Image (tube, rainbow, N blue to C red; front, top):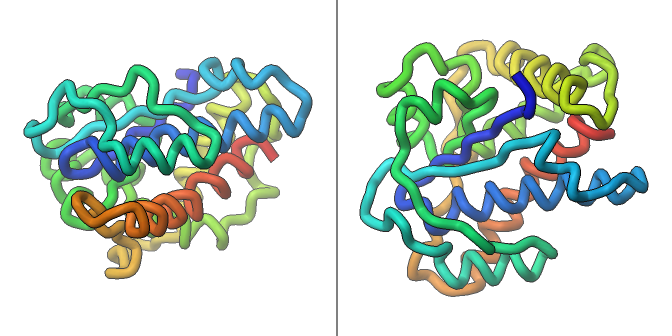
Length: 203
């Protein structure tokens, strides 16, 4: 049931998945602004959250270079605290986006029945471009419409995948400890998936 829920997964939940979490929220908020709607309504339409496969950083803030990237693009890291991935988070997600194929396998080891809604981030973005969005439910800025359109989109991208494995280039590099330039590149790659996703949810 609404809101459409996206779970982002990486290793420690302080770099890649928190950036993806907040950059997707930012992208949907920008779509609302373009439609001259209240950007605060994003919480009614979308639940974007994240977790890590490991528990080393539980309770930590977003890694500073990751937070800088989010802020530089117009988002914020306020209130973020790292979490370890749990099975119930997967169960409640309409879409699970992992940073790498290894984390994709980790998610499916916990919940094999989530296979049709779990993708490597770059894989989802790559396949999204081939989906016939005209065949999706009508687009409206209501929780029910975004949920219906989002879940139909996930099913369409899964069908486009056709059982093929993700490509090596679909992985997001781990930028931890590698400096702002690497974080900037990874944030760009995240936006290559979350911005088109937001554009389909709220065209």
